[in-house]
Length: 411
Image 1 (cartoon, rainbow, N blue to C red):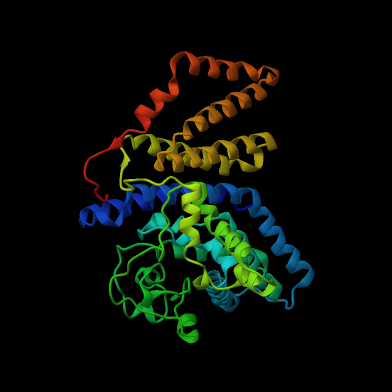
Image 2: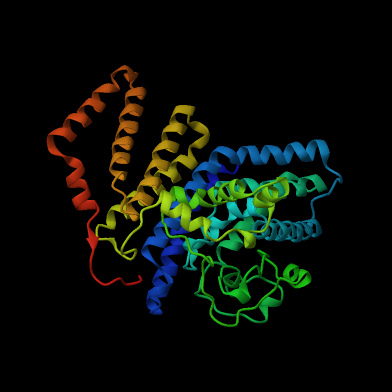
């Protein structure tokens, strides 16, 4: 876990660059690049990935060392030429992980979340799920297996991830001469597009020559339309993470025979039955008469995201010094808050009870710290009494769920 303290500064750095991008976009008078709901959703997913990876990053590192110490094929030294070879190898492995992530249902279920956003900006770079992090770690195990030292691999993955962050922006246009070698925001923007001519193109993360070699390169011509070919009709934190797994399961249930069921899981997303998602959305989500209505009381969401970011930064910095109960408390508090943010965007009335859940978690944690857990029922009783006396749920919903009835405008 030697890199954990360094990672504590990842979230603050992300928001600094996000703020700079937002201000430059305002100056250039291109407000359509940012959308309130989409940005909140993107940031929520990014916070969850950083949080959960704290608990499993050490396992990734240990796995690399285990493979290197026991099964490496070569003894590769550390010098400038090896570092250059490693950066090429890292991007080569990424190319095939990324390509399979678009061509195999099981892998697409982990990767699709990254493509939900219909906006292309720095917030879209944050749309990485822990599912996706686990899958790509499996691919990167090839590097220590070949013989690259795990410390070198981990360092290169940090560099690789940092580079890809800056390719998620519309502030930089086409740079034709650079695109012969490097992935630029224009090249990666094509990868995020839903236009037919741009589908399944530009899988490289740093270099374009893998796409050129394997026939998947496409330069930007017309301005891309970002997002999925069949957009998701929800900002729900939980639904965005799980919907495609439900779709695979639904397709598997409809399929008859081993071969067809195998294809349901490991076949191409292009062959997914397109009536499955609308069916599941009707089953699990609200049908809204006006999907463009948005909350008036948006600052409440900003406050929640700000609190999550602050807690996550401090939590990351002191992660090694905390005991198991501290870690479980922070994990539960942040995840409930992120689910609450998605529920607010969806205008779900049940999210009010998540507020009580958070209060109960906080009070129980502090009672535990003071060795008074036997009194956990007291705050629970107070909450029930106050709710019955003042009907707080109605007041809460009337204030927090107020809708902005003005004409919908993209921010």
